[in-house]
Length: 349
Image: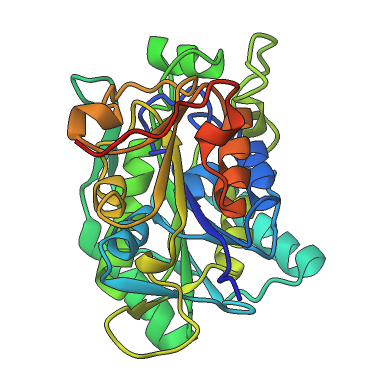
């Protein structure tokens, strides 16, 4: 009997990935990979598309910090049928914009049947600031992180939240970097700050969390790239986050004997952009028996290929080729056997 074939698909946040660096443009990649494996583990950056999403029963929505802990062998993933999702709103969100987010939350309850708790407003404005590193990656800071943690604790303890959706008021975007992003040519200027927010909650409470930014509606622009267009559809990016969190696996101590949880040793393959191999998850998973498939045409700002770190990987040109590599691996077929030029056996030196 063979075990479930399990794949991790990574596209790190805020590094300008040509596929997965925009609004949900890696969802087709996730959908395709999910067809050639039994279990796909990926993160919100891959699956979030503002008001667009595509939920599949064999796809696990795992926040980045939790995914790093999973890859390090500290946390396991416990599947769930449904999470009760708590909603936290930044005190800095204006009344009309707050109403739009509450209406989006109510819409997911009415049309999708999601189980949401009563919402919590932070006791202080979170104070989000956006930053860009010298390498071009985006990141950010919070002026009042303790206010976020107090709100999360209240949602968990008083409302019974099993996962946390956070909506923080972000600075309204403008300038060359934002224009390049909307035209499909730059780094998402808010993605790195979003990761900081969700990391904070997951690290503190060890439950699933994800973030949706609150921004003023933008004027219509005919030059917006199709890859960024999902962010142009409405007043909020919240629906995809609520859907993802509603079935996100819970975190469990991987060192226990608990049955039914997925551990890092269960991973068979990892798919990652070729130039984005410097992250914690890849570095840890490269120490396991999992096969790493590096995708060349998904370029990023990181420029850290597997060879530079001594990581053994199969490099393919595209995600279409990556799908073939996964199918062959699952079937137990050596990639060399699919080439017209097979070298003869040689004696071991």
